[in-house]
Amino acid sequence: MSDMNATTEAIQLAVAPVFLLTGVAGMLNALGTRLARVIDRARNLQTQLESLADTAELKRLKIEKELDTLELRGKIINAATALMVLCAVLIGLTVMELFYSAGLEGRLMLSRWVSLSFLGGFGFFITACLMFLAEILVASQSIRLGRQSRPRS
Image 1 (cartoon, rainbow, N blue to C red):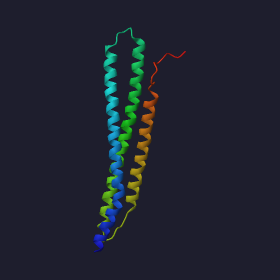
Image 2 (image 1 turned 135 degrees about the horizontal axis):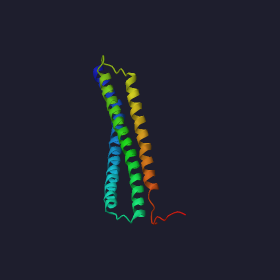
Image 3 (image 1 turned 180 degrees about the vertical axis):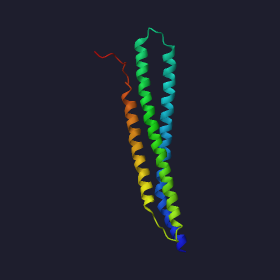
Image 4 (image 1 turned 135 degrees about the vertical axis):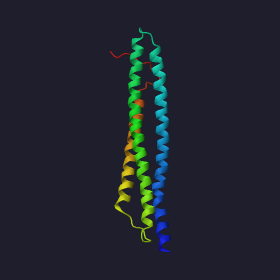
């Protein structure tokens, strides 16, 4: 009977990390979508750049500047994605540790690894969310809504 209580307790404790995994999956989806848009835009600009005449220097510079911004955005998104994947791995390990600890001697014996893996995963999640915000800010600063870009004097 105490075996069942430990398993039940482990399941109850594993609910929070599983909900976090759902959030991680949503963030990975959002990051993947943003990365796909960055790649598509960069490919489009690269094609435009290759078809420009040598006399269109101002247009070439504008496209190259946007490509630089897209490269930075891609790097930020890739780093945030890597952190999200590490988060998912650590949270998955947390869930495994919880179930492993429930099987020991019929009572729940939590090790320090449970808290370390959960807090580490949560730390990666927070850092990745901050990087996601940074990418959004870089993207927002790179556009001029409703205005033609004019050379500054």
